[in-house]
Image 1 (cartoon, rainbow, N blue to C red):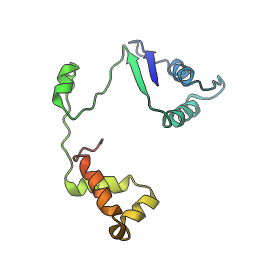
Image 2: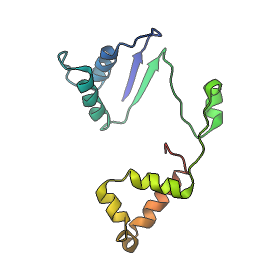
Image 3: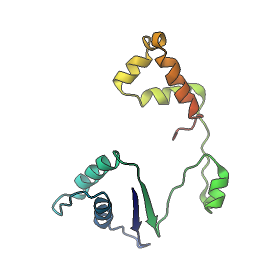
Image 4: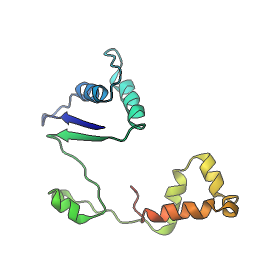
Length: 133
């Protein structure tokens, strides 16, 4: 799903209008009486079940990439913040911290018998130490 939203360069964002645009694009019901925070939770839940891209026109964005060249192609090098990669131990701890209790238990001592732990370690290593991966 592609969602295109024009965001003016004004100092205040029209949150309701942005939420309404997203709702319309996803064919979701709209309730004017709902508070912004409740509507935001509903939209987040709906978006987690979709593959989507949101295009914000006339807006400042944060771009994350593994490749410095991408920043230069997007003319985003002026405010470049370089993140260092995590070491193996820190990457593994971050990976384990994001697992559900059930998944974490299967990666534990029982996981070494059925190959789950080794598979999980390969997944964590494939992120290359990047916290956002």
